[in-house]
Length: 209
Image (cartoon, rainbow, N blue to C red):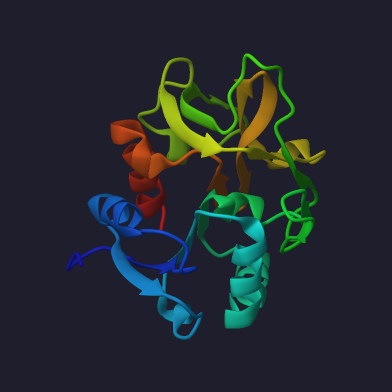
């Protein structure tokens, strides 16, 4: 753990290896507190929600551990939050994956890609993100026209709340690849797997705390 910098709590949903996520946030200047339950989270400057795996199991863990209501309250209080991949999808009302109810923090749903045979599912690899809206601190050092980020997913968010959409990506058709609301940010792509530009987004977030 870094000896300086803000303490951020990384949710441990017990679904996959979190080592690369924790290392990336440490590299960005944060001190990491890995937590399976929300006990003691009030001492943290931010919550980081990395998501891997299937949303039915993820939501069940969030409800069982108390994280579900903690996240609803935290984001409602406009406290700093960063969600990654499944950590973004769970914020919405419903997912087609397992016909699963989400946290319902934001209006919208999560659906599986419906694409022609020329497109592979999951969408896996590097792709551009068209950042929109006014969020200059988090995109400092990012070339909005050229930089690409790493994706691994079969489902994507659909929302009618255009003010919520922070970034869009095209894979067969345009989809929401990042959201922003107050101090809540989330990306469908994996910044920790996106080399220097992904780490730049994390660093910018840590500097904002």
